[in-house]
Length: 404
Image 1 (spheres, rainbow, N blue to C red):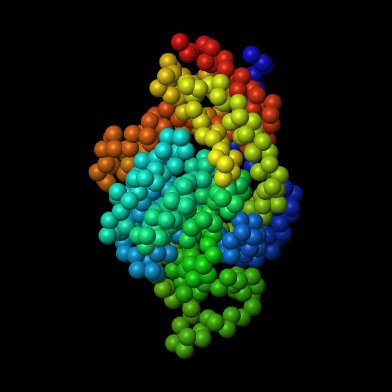
Image 2: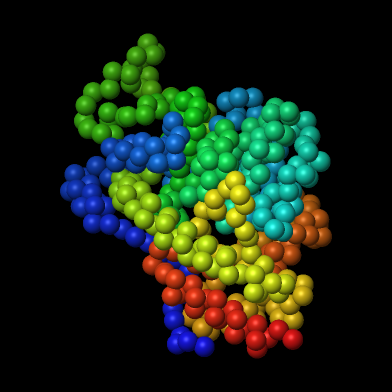
């Protein structure tokens, strides 16, 4: 075994451009959502190939507000949204935050994504949307999902939080449905430290999103002159009622705006996007292409011919043939300096907050197995092939010791 190395799970890159913008913003004292947030939205939309982007305060809010758009198109509170049982808990939380009822579907063990063959089994007259998750940056089967949605007249909202750089049949994840929701949390390729963003090609959706993020206000211009300067806004009183449009609330809304400093970090992150993506992809593929030697004891995802995995992290699932536990594997890797994270949980049966929905353990066997036996490790831009080889060597040594 080579010398012990440090392989942290995540990192953040903040270029000098961002630091200069933050200094300028603080000096201007215009720190709430304004000029830089709008520049960030336009730059993010261009990066992903979408017509519209609306920045919010977290990836959870991105999911929730994308769903809340549906109320303007006939949805009612308490109606149903279909989503995979396995995801970071924010996906399920967001459905509840938006006022909908989550209806869970098991995942495919090889892809970690929603089992599309089971979706139509749970569609009812109350179903309004499907929310696939591109878990670990592995694209879900969007052709099949969109086909079901078209036949059953449902909306599709992508949870693309972990899918930066993911491609499906030549299109970027997040642009494959009615709306795409991204996280800008510190661990992601594009980050504003905290934050989220929703993209869409439908201007009517983006107008509603701008209202939703600011308490449901009727004021929803893309470029607010009041936020950018002290200029007079002629729209404020043009309704003829004498009421200030900023205090007219058209819908139930949220307080979910991005601030200017976050936008500055996000703009610097986009500046580095292709460099970071390339480094992460190299790390990910280096490990995936050498993973066969750990089978049948360990498993991970693979890249299909018409897709590109977004390099968020490397999932590792302990298989039934193994003579060791997930905890033993994680403990050994941590002792060798490799940080690990569990591979989430079956939300309806392994997360206590969802018990009130009435699901029972055993209903989602694949999600539950992964929740009990999976971990994931970092592939971020501050790591290189030396660290990836160290990870591989550590797994080799662990199997030598623990596999009987």
